[in-house]
Image 1 (cartoon, rainbow, N blue to C red):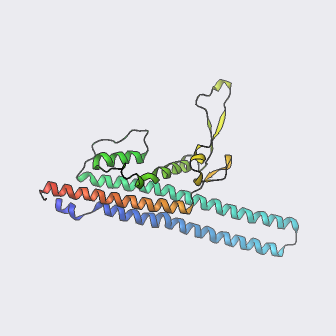
Image 2 (cartoon, helix red, strand yellow):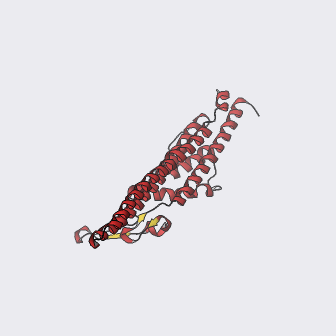
Image 3 (cartoon, rainbow, N blue to C red):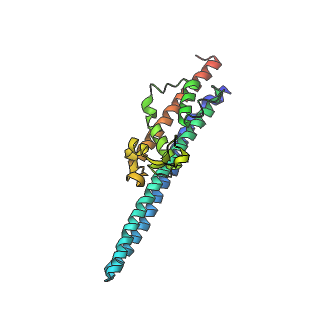
Length: 245
């Protein structure tokens, strides 16, 4: 059994699969979708331009100009949606990879309890589990995971708030007998302005392509590092249990 485990690197397999999924299923799908949108947009704009050149009616020309603006705005909004969804998918796939690798480590470090508290994020629970089960020091490698919290918060704003950057909320101590008073919560846009397009009630979460690419690169690096750390510990355990120095 030990010889079998020493020949099979489950962690590198997960790392390779993670890279494939991210580049093909997430970024590849995004690229294909954007190309499709841009092709349709170019077609629509060409038709509008041709109609403008033929028309001599002022009212109709204004209508066509409005259509031109609407096509561009629709394309921008749809591209923003696709980039946002790519970040959501990346965060989910990263969680899945980390959990898969921790399951593979059952052979040398069984999971004996639930790690963390219910109010902790899934990533903080994973960091705690990796620390307590495998002795991986995240405090000394904080730069490897610092991107995750931002990605998680942005993901949650997209998923739970419909990508609205500023949302109306009620005061916890509101007196319902005196009427309800709501306020515009701008905490997200104030803390993560680089992920926001627009302002006030119209502000929306907007993940740029550069931000997505950086998150992808950091995620791949993180999974690759943890895969090597877990494999090193697994081999050390195999040598120990086999009496090999």
